[in-house]
Structure formats: C-alpha cells, structure tokens
Amino acid sequence: MSDSLIEFSHLSKIYDTGEVKTYALRDASCLISSGEFVAIMGPSGSGKSTLMHILGLLDRQTEGSLLFEGKDVSLFDDDRLAQLRNQRVGFVFQSFNLLPRASVFENVEMPLLYDFYSERMNRRARVEAAVASVDMSHRLYYRPNQLSGGEKQRVAIARALVNEPDLIFADEPTGNLDSKSGLQVMSTLQDLNEKGSTIVLVTHETATAEHAKRIIRMQDGSVVGDGHVAHRRFARSLEDAVLK
Ligand SMILES: Nc1ncnc2c1ncn2[C@@H]1O[C@H](COP(=O)(O)OP(=O)(O)OP(=O)(O)O)[C@@H](O)[C@H]1O
Ligand SMILES: [Mg+2]
Image 1 (cartoon, rainbow, N blue to C red):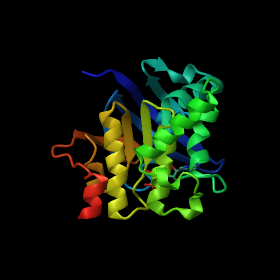
Image 2: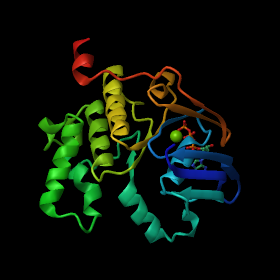
Image 3: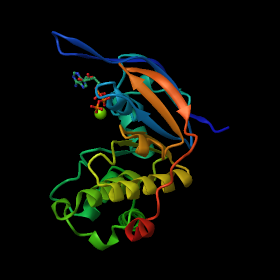
Image 4: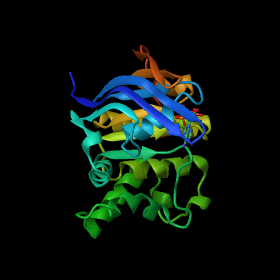
C-alpha cells in the first residue's frame, strides 16, 4: 500500500459575498495516496475547481480538515503554505495561464525563480529537460501567441513539472484541445504518473477520466462516488497518434 498524501474530511468552502452565501463544498471527504492518478468528475458548479484549489494549497477551506502527508495544513501560515506548494505541487490550468510576453523557456523557468537554491545553469538544464519531455524543444523561444492550443497546454504542463513536484493538479487540461492533442497531454500525464508523480485531474469527459486509475465523483459540493477504473485507457504515443 502506498502512503497517504492528502486526506480531507468534512471539508466545506463557503463563498460569502455579503448578501449570499454559496456552499461550493459541503462535507467533502476523501483520501488520496502517493502515486495515484485520480480523475475528479461532476457537473458544472459541483465544486471541482474549488476542491482542487484547496487540495493544491492555493486556497483554504472554511471548515473541515486537510492533512498533507499527515500534517494539518490549516496550522501553517501563508508563507509556509506557499513554500510547501512551490516545492511539492504543480498546476495545469484550463486557460493555460502562460505569460504572453515571455518565451516558452521563460514561462517554464518561472516556478524555478521562486526557488532560492536553484542555480542559473542548473535551471537551464531543468527547463530544457521539462520542455523536451512534452516534445516542445523546437519551440523554446516562441511566445504563446505563436503556439497552437495543444502546444500551449504542453508548455503549461512543462511548467507544472519543471520543479519535479510530487503532486500535479490539472483542471480540464484537455478541455480546449482536439482529440489528438488531448491524447498527447494525457500520455504526458500518464508518463509522469508512471515515474511516480501523483496526478489529480479534473475533467467532464468520461474518455479522458478513463486514463486515470480512479474516478471521484462530485455533486453539490460533496464526494458522491469513488471507484477504480476497470479498463484503463492508455494514450497512444505521439508517433502513433500522428500516424493514425
Ligand atoms: N469566488 C467565488 N465567489 C462566489 N461563489 C463562487 C466563487 N467561486 C466559485 N463559486 C461558486 O462555487 C460553486 C462551485 O464552483 P467551482 O468552480 O468549484 O465548480 P466546478 O465544479 O469547478 O464547475 P465547472 O465544471 O463549471 O468548472 C459554483 O456554484 C460557483 O458559482
Ligand atoms: Mg471548474
């Protein structure tokens, strides 16, 4: 059995705008172990992104507990939380969130700039390796507006993995992509998982979720289903996808 990486119980998140209170999460509980590949599914507004932001230490819950490797992170101040996040967690957002004026190299380098200890030469090697792992070495000095949607998403994945996080969150990473680019992104995530990264993926596409090993279902802010994927899909390699 692998170790518990994230354990959350009775989580709630209330957005209070003064007039209305929105329960984005209510009484959500689950455990995710190190090395898992989990897909979170559920209708729009069911709390998937909210949960991902809290589990990824970008936001805090209103009630309930969140343990990261057994440690109660609600006791951490913002600096300690940010440090843990920078060292351990990578994010891939649906809208890519790339800096428009920066090159592929500079975008991927960004998370390393927060890392006080990473030397400049070492940084270059790490950026180049991350970019190569998503097959984007030939576009190292392109800017985002010179890239296709699938290429931007692959750059966003390179940025998420450049600091070798053990935990990667991807919110609808294939949402804006054609099926070939989507398969390529899933293939990259599967490779990372096989190398030991824990992956938490939000998707509304069943076919995409079936690349994961486990599917958690959300409804109205709660976890309502949790099961292993019986017949897992494997993304074909880039060459196969191009040939077919
Ligand atoms: N900053 C906010 N202020 C107020 N309400 C919010 C805020 N962010 C999210 N919500 C509400 O919380 C609920 C859950 O939102 P969330 O973004 O987590 O849903 P989701 O499952 O990711 O949906 P989608 O599939 O459309 O991305 C929604 O009803 C949303 O309107
Ligand atoms: Mg969302």
